[in-house]
Amino acid sequence: MTLELKLRSVGNSVGLVLPKEALAQLKVSEGDTVTLTESQDGVRITAGNPELAKTMAVFESLNRRYRNALRELAK
View 1 (cartoon, rainbow, N blue to C red):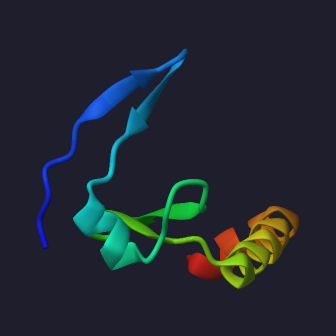
View 2: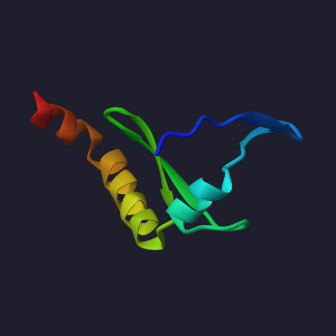
């Protein structure tokens, strides 16, 4: 599915309006949380996943803590 979406002003921010087809595909509705992640081919929007959020928080914490060691290992 390829959809062209329009950005709209919402107060001092900009919002993305998802059509019914996209909401049905994501299995979300108004008030639900979605996750925007960067991928190799751009960005990906997925339905909110509390388990993923916890996992990412742990990753970010460890990434900050061991930043130098990880940088050295990557060489």
